[in-house]
Length: 319
Image 1 (cartoon, rainbow, N blue to C red):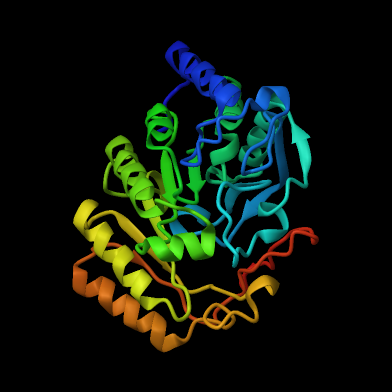
Image 2 (image 1 turned 60 degrees about the horizontal axis):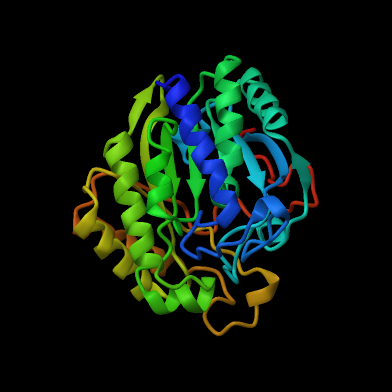
């Protein structure tokens, strides 16, 4: 299903790389010249930094399949989520610097290992370099689908530039309430930027999830992490999605929230989600008429990573 990278796409990648000179890759639009070592909110220059890459079995079943998703965890983030389970790498720029050609080799190696797809996590601040690497990997024989696994706080114009290069979009839609986006992720305007970006993603790859041999090869899965004590945020998020996104788009309702050290004393976020809270939001989504829902068991297999371990995630029980 993957579209070959042709001359047109190389032109788009050049335009993407040029954004580094006055960065507007995300809604913060810091305007810094990252090619000269200047940094904005994410703390990254134009040099690509990533932490690890491996076959990940903890994604949604159509992405993990039987052999895992070729997941690449990038350093830093354009969001400031106080509860982030990846805080060890998302709140820092720790990791190793990579060139596009070296990252292309990583992508090809993950394909060789049998991974069903390639999925960079938090690509937004480094998307030009990642897409450059993808173009090199495609030219060298990468054929598996490419997943754009992002936090939802995107610049819709940048997402528009990715048309034809991304096979599967995997955005978060964290917030329906602006106040929660600001309080918990320092992300003003999140609902509007995320919705506009998700609409563009659906325009590019369609509102259905195209499957081949039990594995997704094209489409969109929108993730929503249900936060304890903030059910009104989840309800508002689902209402907005229902109003602006086709009901056939797959929604992943995530129950895996685990309080990280920074929020363990927080009056709402300092505990795990209760089964009754998850059930309430699941019923709400069903009543809204969403046709394709991925659900999780509250208190199921632990999905919180430790990026000081190798691998960062515990293997699933059947692996």
